[in-house]
Image 1 (cartoon, rainbow, N blue to C red):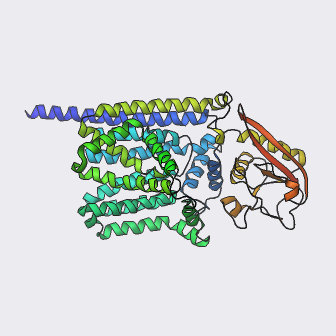
Image 2 (tube, rainbow, N blue to C red):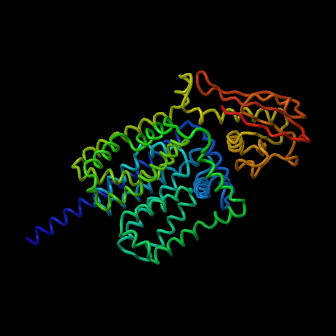
Length: 501
């Protein structure tokens, strides 16, 4: 009998090792494929990515619209790889793989290794994650820290150890350095404490408060930077809520909620709804934990969408817990085949996105308008601006558009042409206006570049030449920039308002 038990234990351990190894191999292969696609993709940088790259060339405690975490990530990747679009983006698939590992650890702690492997693979292949790995954004480092914090706090509830408390604080602090949305951890923790007495008791632990002090210490460089710069990042973040105009927008709510279903994938969404309806008040403590760190975020963003607007990724933090919860509920429902179906659906999305990314330019030229307009044409139109600058003897470039300033700064980075921002209000409204505003001390003459056909002569004094450059990005759509040559800053330089388009 003892021999049979020992044999069974050895068999289980072997299967466990094979399962973990297979999951890690799948994560590594998928991440490698995503990195390869980045190098084969045809998209130019999105203007936010170009701005993030600019931040990475000068690491500070903060920036106009975001804390510095992403700039550090990009500085690391470009330091190893170079300044190409793929090298700027390469941190995204790597960080999402780490976040998937964190989700897997938490799921394994709750329901065993098989559940952990399933959660890791499902999270890594979520449609929303597959979209996110194609560009670099603050969500990538944020989700790593969020997944780590969820795991560490869940473990702390049992261990109450100094190590877990300090590591938790470090994860939260690093999360704040990535994006201020990390504040949801405290919000969700408070809600969880209200419904779980055990959690409320843990909040009285000195060790946990020491961990929170560690979080503040880790986050302090950005706090100090904001104190030195008029709390500009905090103010900008609050302005993003945009609670002006009509305060009832059901169309925005419907669009946002639909986007959340798309990010999670329809199969996992059905499993979630089915499991929650089936078990209702019979949810386990772990399942309630996951609900506490997901539903409040999504509900808050749904309210934001109803009142004003909410970008699809603003509830991204909720999907770590949602995926794990879907796995746990599928196990209780005896519906593991649904997880396999979800995984297969996710792989199909990955394959489709890869094909699109590698053929987006040629495909876009077969349609009148392309949904990829924001990441096409910037390299080519920058080449045209470069040619104009050389022909006209230009020594500086100025733009009144954050997107144009960001793109020209990146695509003209090797030309020795400084790019500056024209203040279109009386105070800075973006990072470029804050750190590289147009001044009389710039090297002149300058090329003023805008997105719209401004009558430069009627707005600015001293304009001696005007024109435009245009490149096709679809069959019936052009990327067009308008330019004017100036030899000196006007005595009364007016704000030069940007246009949309």
